[in-house]
Length: 367
Ligand code: 2NL
Image 1: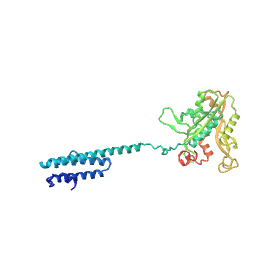
Image 2 (image 1 turned 90 degrees about the vertical axis):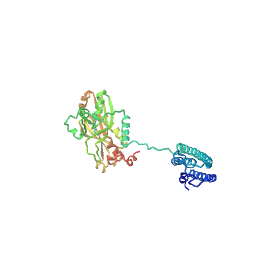
Image 3 (image 1 turned 135 degrees about the vertical axis):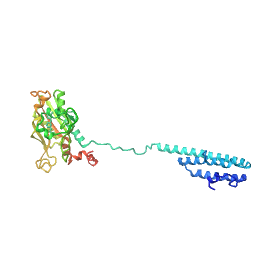
Image 4 (image 1 turned 30 degrees about the vertical axis):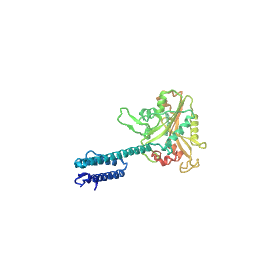
């Protein structure tokens, strides 16, 4: 007979009348318990249910036996039922206690095993980034200018029209503003804009310190362009400025040539081509012999043998007026180069978007 049916009935209903038969019933119950105890594993949720099934106050098997077998037992059987019940209770409790100790020990052991640090395992490898190609190019350019006595100055990307245009001899409605159309910041009382070159920081430096000045200003600059393979709305620039009492066009030319040879190699030749900037006079475009054909003419240099590198010139004396420098006593040169352009040229990057999409297949080529 299955367990609940057996203990749900009174002994008289089961037809038990002798002490031997009582002992037989208890033996049957104990076998059922031992059987289940062996099957119920150390899984603790399952274990709880098993414990309650046997020792639960309300409807546990032991309580059922007390209620159904012991209490209504006939006077002749009461003693033996009580004895058998006590034996069963002791057995059940000792088995449960034993198993519980084993469960706890096993849980502790597995927790200890889990927490143990295996020092022989390889560590977690974290990918360490590398310097982006533009950063590498900035560093290279800065190294060259630092080696000949320039210092690095940085400044804000949000500027006023005065520092970005007026103080650089670009008055309102000057046509030079056309290709430097920029982003204006709305909702501020004073007009603010995103700088179109890093020149504002050269103006700020001259305002603050007396000559001599020998600085380069690296940074991000913005222009309102439609993005394509050669343009973005942002690019990186390094501008340079040298002002002193005795700076000549020869210093300008010598510095430019030194820089180009350091950056592109000793075989590269340089030429200056007349140009125009409102903030320099005279102004020049600096060209270098083509890095692809070496000057003989190819598709990249459009058969000319020359590649345009950057713009430069002698500082327009009008600029000195804005910073309280004496144009009679001082002279200097300045230049501005697009870092992205130079990086693309030197490393053969075909289009601007590649620089800023941060595709690892591109980045990994410049570790
Ligand atoms: C270009 C050309 C240039 C300058 C920038 C400059 C700054 C001051 C005074 C005079 Cl404070 N000049 N900067 C001079 C010549 C050229 O940039 O094409 N840049 C991308």
